[in-house]
Amino acid sequence: MNRSIEDTPIVFIGAGNLATNLAKALYHKGFRIVQVYSRTEESARTLAEQVEAEYTTDLQEISKEAQLYIVSLKDAAFVELLPQITEGKQNALLVHTAGSIPMSIWEGYAERYGVFYPMQTFSKQREVNFREIPFFIEAKRPEDVELLKAIAATLSGNVYEATSEQRKSLHLAAVFICNFTNHMYALAADLLEKYNLPFDVMLPLIDETARKVHELAPRDAQTGPAVRYDENVISNHLAMLADSPALQEIYKLMSKSIHEHHQL
Amino acid sequence: MNRSIEDTPIVFIGAGNLATNLAKALYHKGFRIVQVYSRTEESARTLAEQVEAEYTTDLQEISKEAQLYIVSLKDAAFVELLPQITEGKQNALLVHTAGSIPMSIWEGYAERYGVFYPMQTFSKQREVNFREIPFFIEAKRPEDVELLKAIAATLSGNVYEATSEQRKSLHLAAVFICNFTNHMYALAADLLEKYNLPFDVMLPLIDETARKVHELAPRDAQTGPAVRYDENVISNHLAMLADSPALQEIYKLMSKSIHEHHQL
Image (cartoon, rainbow over all chains, first blue to last red; front, side):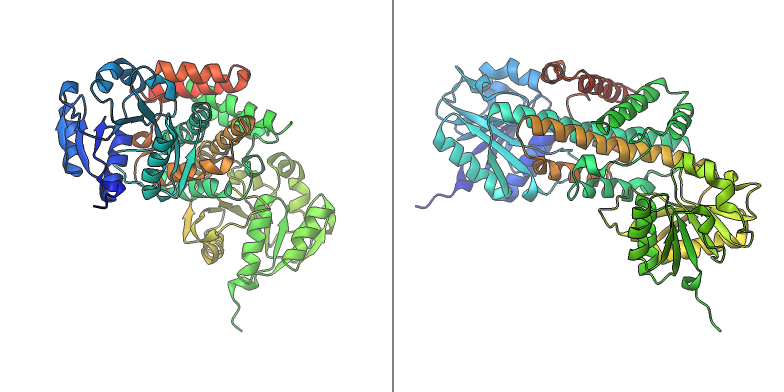
């Protein structure tokens, strides 16, 4: 009998943003998600229903029959629960999905282990297209590297092997690229709300700023008053932010950093 | 004889990023650009050649026969040159393209004046699609508002009237949305270069971060360690940035701001 990779029974430990998106993507590719664990029943049930799986909120109740355990918990919870998560799963492959945690975390707890890191920003409310998401794979055993690469390749065209060291650097860069960038959008949204202007009018600028760096290096794509440190515009903007010292500080620090970057 | 709006003879004063993109877009729509002024001959000639116009580097040589003068200079240069720019052009419409400068700057120098502000990031090396760029129009005379709106409408589907006050707020928000965001890309590019990792691997994340706020409010789209202030990840990242105090400071300030934003 010909068994396909999609028959690998998978348990998801964690039902947050990443787990939700990844589990649904695998489910839609025909993978068998057998169980979902989450500390909170609503999260566990919601995801389980979407991928036709059982669910539990009790670590002791996690099935020991699966072949792949995908652990996607907050970093602190993962470290704390590691002994219970790994208990009795000696034959299975255990992976985590965190950019920030080295593979060595598994050492002494499991025999077959690795990392399955899709580098993307996930929210439960939004379904993402996995085709272009880069997956960074690492595993203790070469055959598990191949298995994880094969699973990732069913979802994405961009599957790479990466060391824990490389993944840590990618994750740090991703915080600047995504988290800090989105916060700039959020700060602008607050400003616009204050002035009774709609946020939507900014979308073409957001899109072009993103598209531009497909073609130009970010340094060459930089525009705005800080590049040549236009005193006049900058002091006007700082005056407009007089009632938000926190925003003023961000404005100053970013403008200084842009200017220094362009004097190099 | 039926004259169309495209027959309006236009002079560009300034040949920078914005002027270059705008002049080319108007030229491709059939407008007659009769002359380009720039302080530097190379900029003046390069743009003039692309739009089949004359060029000059001498303010005194600027044609007095045009009907529309589009002034797109650095803010400080514009203010300084205002008397020379307006001299002898009593019958023409004069507009500037700056988000940051109020329309009232023209008062006492011209009779017909206004602002023609396309809110976008422009670089000479990249041609942008004007269709979605929001244009913000202001003019002293109602008939000039209509003329400017009609010209903008040949390029874009998003043409609005805006007061100087509104434009100033939009421009400030745009600095966060575009300039600071692009600088985040640039800082990440430096980090990745240091670790010998390619910048291109970040493009799907950049694109999704931009796309996400078409659907979710930026606040709801926020992810990453700073939202719940994950001490462990954040202190690891700060340790990785130990050799760049400037980057550390930006990381700290942004993480603090994100966290505070999510405690509101």
